[in-house]
Length: 274
Ligand SMILES: [Zn+2]
Image (cartoon, rainbow, N blue to C red; front, side, top):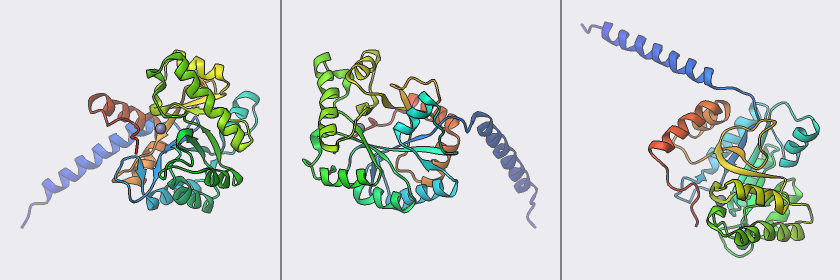
């Protein structure tokens, strides 16, 4: 007969460890602040960590809906912070960087199904100019359904690598192009590759943006610098819903683990050009 006691002991130790880990996470996590999700591609064909599969994405949207989340726009976030305009009970900002075509073909119909809108940061040089990226008709169709479009600069060059004059052009011209095409104010920016510093931050403000989004991991809080808004990156994952849950609902712990991992095992650059 097998002696079961070692197995029992292992199980007890495993349960004990799991309880400690759960306690650690619940201590570190705080449901305060507002989550801003950061997606890139929603696509089954692309072998890139930036590409979340369509089923995974649909499951993530279904999760948000089932937990009572309501999508908000950057304007609603700013109005809440500046003027105290109330937000829904569980607000979430769903953002996409780069303006990939699959945002229209894949993400848009799924989000509509769940009543969500998103904010897409466009690289204006690529619009209607590259088959991987959105065209104006697609952008306008989404705009009519409540999607918001911001600037991701002209060419996606990290702003910190440019001269002052080049950076100024990369920030100013997309606003003019987008405002002319979309006939609404365009006042939000996502820094290409998340790269910014104090002078880029100040220039962004000077050029007329109201806020700028980074790829720094975290939730946002009233009183935060509007030109350094943190987001929660959502990448392709082997455990998409678990990973999504941890990042969304336990952001502080997930951010800490992410930052430790990035320090010792840095991932490839946050954004890859196609
Ligand atoms: Zn980007």
